Length: 460
Image (cartoon, rainbow, N blue to C red; front, side, top):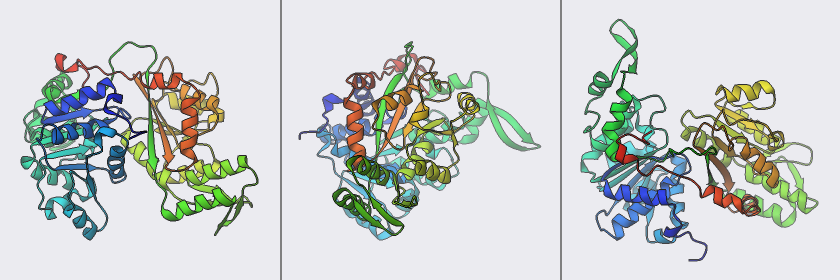
């Protein structure tokens, strides 16, 4: 089992969360991005299934491109190796076949939850709702399907880092699925009448509500017994630093192209011929393929895949309204990102001021422009590396734009989008091991583990 992480490698706050899930048949884990919600939940499942024998069949509901994350996470940990899973996606025939497989965990994307409810005859004694906030609309089909399934489920876990992306009103639907209305009421009307008052309305039609004085504290108190938050409540001048890897995978054809270039330094593509005359040039070409596009010898651009763009889109969505800073390396990275989503590149003092004022939801930055003394910490706490740089100095400088004194959030999350089995993995390994202090900083993530004693401290 060499190379696998072990249960003892889990952080103390992760072990605390595992025990919380085991102790609470209904549990809401509000975890900041990057704190390991997947391994926490899988460890709890493994313990409940193989140590306590209290669950037999588990359903995980998650975003489509996160399905593989649950399956792949099992492969990284020695203590999870006994768990088996089946991905319930693809065509209707493929989904039915996946449900017929013998497995501990069945993983379905949230878009197929309604189909699963209507067609599946399996009964699940434990359900995990990964990204609980995607069930905040009580009128959605997925909410209604999960609500109908809920009474037959003995254990349920809701995972999210942003439970109130659009305000406290979001919480009702999320917790209605968890505790079937025990804490915030069985009906949305009860919740509204108790904690809110009309804000904008026209005659009898109310367009929005705002919380009554003291409503937030009252709501937090109501849900505190089944909720644990991973937001640190300490007085450190420096925020905690969390480093996370988001893996994407090439198709067989894309892998063939990558290996062909690596082997022969020449790759024939429909858009032109690419040659790599030396190792340095080859490295750049491989980095480009890993990122999804490559320059041809005549300065053209050939798109190879959109895997990283899909992953970036998922990460931005999971931030649920939080501002995001994206680091890119190649010009075609920037161009492709700009075509996929609305972004602004940080190049001028006006851009920097707007970012720090929270006016730019998704910002682009090139590591070479993220020099010493550039303060961006007031604008956000999430950095996503779309393409990595070999330069440890540029890497550290870019991270330091957010991870520095004056950062308003207690945690800075650095996400690395890495194409599995490519030069990306080698670059990340070099960056991680050139400076031994990095590991210590990453391990310094803290969480308020005494929050349940205060009733509301640490919630949300």
